[in-house]
Amino acid sequence: MAASGFLLIASFLLVLFVLAKPLGSVLARLIEGEPLPGVGRFESVMWKALGDDALEMSWKRYLAAILGFNVLGVLALFVILMTQGSLPLNPQQLPGLSWHLALNTAVSFVSNTNWQAYSGETTLSYFSQMVGLTVQNFLSAATGIAVVFALIRAFSRHSATTLGNAWVDLTRITLYILMPISLLIALFFISQGTLQNIATYQPFTSLEGVQHILPMGPVASQEAIKMLGTNGGGFFNANSSHPFENPTALTNFVQMLAIFLIPAALCFAFGEAVGDRRQGRAILWAMAVIFVICVVVVMWAETQGNVHFTQLGADSNINMEGKESRFGILASSLFSVITTAASCGAVNAMHDSFTALGGMVPMWLMQIGEVVFGGVGSGLYGMLLFVLLTVFIAGLMIGRTPEYLGKKIDVAEMKMTAMAILVTPTLVLLGTALAMMTDAGRAGMFNPGIHGFSEVLYAVSSAANNNGSAFAGLSASTPFWNVLLAVCMWLGRFAVIVPVMAIAGSLVSKKSQSAGVGTLPTHGPLFIGLLIGTVLLVGALTFIPALALGPVAEHLSFVNL
Image (cartoon, rainbow, N blue to C red; front, side, top):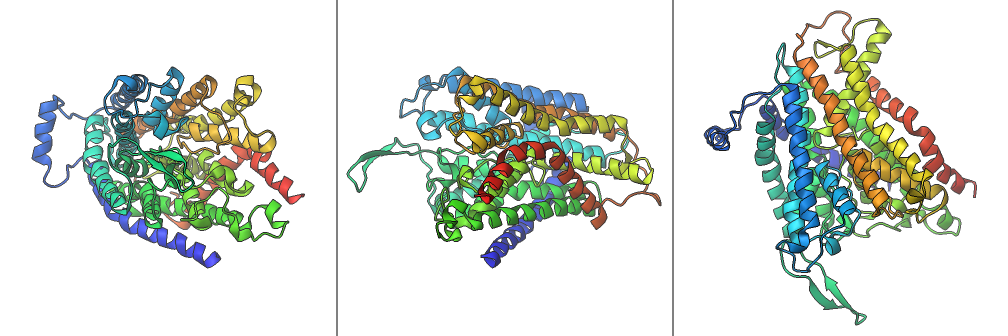
């Protein structure tokens, strides 16, 4: 079992890095503001037709464009969901959503969270799925990548005042990166058996003679961008454990690759854009080390099995409750770490059925800000915040003004870094406390005691960190939970983007200085170790008390049986 696990991890990372490196070069070209070969004339005609002069923006204008664009996205999706009963492509005649569920869903998909407090196949029409959710899957992913483009330019440019043009970045990312790759992935999924149609649901009779309805729909097209854009919202309630979404072991492997593809490629792109590929590789190494450790822990925990069963003489290797037999323990464990390390939220197994420690690791990966590869764009700019924090701490240790890539890190940058890092822990801890202290919050809990607290903590962690996965065992489709989680999702996304853009605006105007004798190298093993230690330390100090009340206490209660 151990050999199979390490082989699975190694093969996954090998294929991932082989695919990510060339994509990183393409992304670096876009960061530098150059159109891809053969599309320059097409772009000039397009900008002229759209009336956009493609002039570069200051950080405030760039931020205003990003925020305004996403506010309009929430309003448009909210209206679609509320009025879907009167819109076309609704063969099942599904009614519009309630205001609080429509609000929660709109904020969820615009913020790249894709939390779903509903069953997709029984709640949303084809129009809502395609024109509403799938479109926002593209746009929310493009938003995260655009923000990290602006931050990378802040490091690569010197004494400048602009960070690029938000509309150009959003357009290029969508047309040249997200759409072509999504098309290839969708066609592959269709070849493997994933649904793609707009037919009415089909009635059938089971072997027991019971009448059922078989859902249909445009699944493959949504599934592709769901994974590539680290969105995670499934067409079906069972998400990637449903055979119509994830039919084979091969599609399961491709889905995992798609989740990490752009986050890994952005690390390579970062190194190329700043003129030092070692910097991108250092960040990639830090992410990979934490990722491998987390996968090993989850695989170990899940292969140990449930103590209630092992005490009765059951084999720990048959710990398959909540897992698909098509994938098994190892692939399910790997998928759970990938989807929570990234801001994806797609699941091919029930995390609520994992062992206490096996479920704690995905929860903690979300709580540290999903910086281990992370979401498209958001993972890298989140990790770069930790890089700035690490440089600052190291600078204090050696008595020098901290600097990164030749730019001094001053008080203003550190204030914004602290603010951005503290956003999600504040939302998680305050949101969990509010849910546990109010009758409306506790009313949604199906499981009392320690595990019920873990389910609440997981749900708020998932929303505030824009993940979207769930422990389940929680009735979250109520006005209280829909509004609470919508607030967490919106602030967890955009209250981080605001200080990130402020940091970019401050750094881009600074001159780059040559490295001196006392400059800390930020590409070697020492710095990688410091960066990993900073991520672990911040996560440990912030969430150990909450985790101790949930999964840790649950694990200890099993040990003491």
